[in-house]
Image 1 (cartoon, one colour):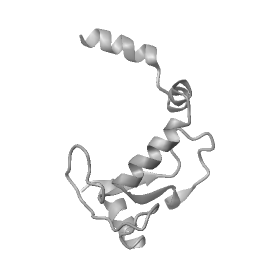
Image 2 (tube, rainbow, N blue to C red):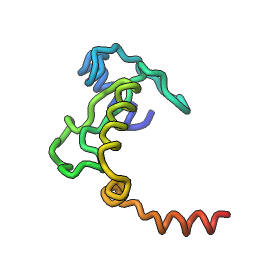
Image 3 (cartoon, rainbow, N blue to C red):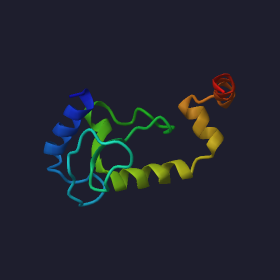
Image 4 (cartoon, helix red, strand yellow):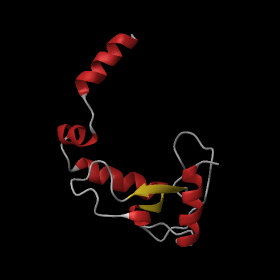
Length: 106
């Protein structure tokens, strides 16, 4: 098992299997690929790489357990309010470097 699996297990016990954002009961699943079921427990970072005020949360409280449905919704809401260029800047993404990589790959 990897490090995140143990984090999920610990958070699951601490949060008593309830999503951080909604009262939904979650299931601990592992080894899944593709889209997760809505009630799957996911490790959600309160401090994302897109946040201007990153570093506000310290220690163990930087991550919480959220159901997959809430994690998708909250992430989409947070990213929708920021222009794409600003998202690229904050995440360290360089569109020119990616274009060069794609040209070499084809």
